[in-house]
Image (cartoon, rainbow, N blue to C red):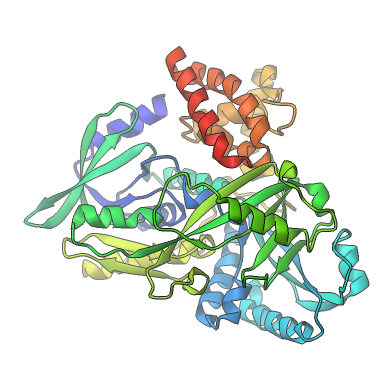
Length: 517
């Protein structure tokens, strides 16, 4: 399509970039935006699609991390609470307040939880979302009508943030373009360019054409999440591993399993994990697990024992017991935790680390969605110190993200487009057929598909059904049923042939197998 061809052509004709960022997840997108806003000529390269990996597979919470407070990681919590507030201020169409209830079934837990969450409130300061408080059994059941009543004493209510991770990633990508930075997906870094062992750029393969492109750059930043070690090995084959991958699994249920508007947070399950049940659009996200993994994959698969753990634990807190046939989708993500001697990944810090190799490659490891902006600021500050630059002031705290729209009360499949929504509605006005839904059980119209292809760099059926819309998570079965028509519709927009359509249908069917249980 024209926009992709224009970007590829610009990459080819640019003599040298100030900054090349490898990786199109939360950290990479944030870093590229910060770099662009400081005036550096910036290019972001993503081997697959934006947020294809970990950054679209979170618990959908913009949170300070209540459990990190329990672990004594006060600085991490304080930073995350500040960043949670900034996320909401900069993208109010995507980030919203969410009430949480911690059910209390033991008298000794009540003062512990209440005191801890009061500290949470104080640390949030003026960016706090609401006061924590102990509530009665009756009020707890009013907030969560179908909570298991047996042994229930009451609850502790607190406030955190909720968002759509993939949509925020797409919004960051659009914001970079708004400020004249360059971003491209399906562009895989296959080699590093060096002169006398000093990094001078990257070799990139256009995954759609197979063409190899050499890109000169003054600085190269490795922000590839769980894949940072593959780039480090590309730089130095003797590089030691820097990531301890940990798998987190979630299931999606219909709203009937949690009829109130509040979320449930279970701070201590049988094996010491935290369990969330969170309203998200008109569904419920339940998770997560924390399973150490030896290998990394762009499409991790939930283990049988992880699914069983979530279902077994959830039934203790939801009045209606979820069965496997009730699961609309299951998804797994890999956390890029910093390498640690601690074998228990639940105890490994979620903070981040930035390192520079002898060649000059800058690598950022660790972190989480909520702190993406601070991580990005730290990376560019680090780069400036490395270069002994005077430095340019970071302004991302105050930059309103693409589509910015105030007074959006809750997550909605339309509201996430913010100020772009009237443009989507204009598509429908010009072509009323675009107002039809892609499937009876999915809330998206053909207008959103067209918008995703023409304005959000969607290139595959997976891009549309997984991340431009959240269809795959809402209902994996319905998404599969819609996929063939989506492929045909996209082929017409992208100028693709029948072979492309068949390949897309086959690939998506294989993908859906990982999202069903």
